[in-house]
Length: 255
Image 1 (cartoon, helix red, strand yellow):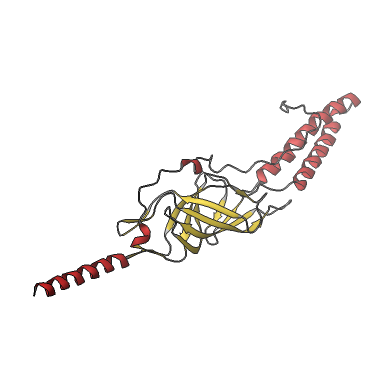
Image 2 (spheres, helix red, strand yellow):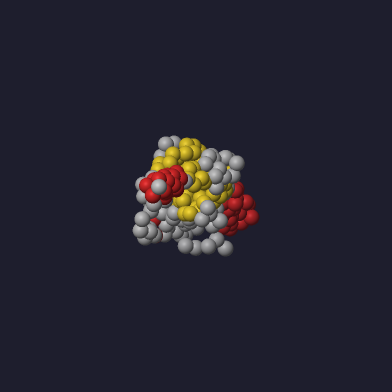
């Protein structure tokens, strides 16, 4: 009788152990995982197929258990690059997320898109497609033409006053300056779409991720790797360089 009781107990313990080992955790579709850029990408240098590397910055929990801890690695791929046109059109950058690696090395392959972008960024995110768009620069174009025209007025007025007709000289100078500024705008592209190192964004899962209990043994908590996330964050696109304005010395403001 004692042997039967002992055997039954062992069976129950084994069943309980098997059930515990078989327990799994599911990260549902639509879960948002905050990430930080490890490397930088830009439409100026990136080409389709370039790799993108990020790390998670906030724990994702399921049933009270940390499933995706901070410091998990995410790898992605640049799938589309479009530079801004010389007359119109904005730069575009599309990144697809491909895999997630936990700190203990457990890896899952998947497909995910970008769901939100750092609030400090001047870039625009198309949430439907997960595509990053560079900022427009119509204001910069107008400023370039205006500054060139103002410089032309100054030079034209001086030349006209010497010839006895300052008003005509100013008008001719303004037209010439504006033309030079317009040529500069047409010869240059708009701002590039850029995701600098340290930019924070959210990855949205388009399919569930499942982990067994045994795959979530992270041992001693890893130290936070700040070296990957201490970048300057997103920066505004650089203004295109203006053409030299006739008669204007470097460092001097046009009156």
